[in-house]
Image (tube, rainbow, N blue to C red; front, side):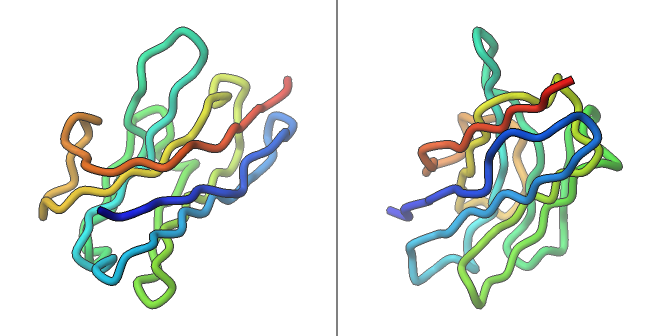
Length: 124
């Protein structure tokens, strides 16, 4: 079972940027599709972005397209989420997730492993 540890969250003003990192503790990182999800207070967990094992395929939620970029470095066992032009509605706990499937799924039920989450707060 892969272990995931997120970092990089914090408090930022609207229009600012943050980069989240997710370190995966596994020897098979390059075989996992990786995803970022977020959950705001009293809301369901929602898909943000996902990337295939070889970075050949990426998917984004409509709400973050053009502002967020997902990437991965298989040599460092790390996936990143660069978040630009942040908005107050981006405020949430952000979770990293891993899945053995080839395709990039957008539903949390498809993912096998989860990190503990990192808080992102965007002030207006």
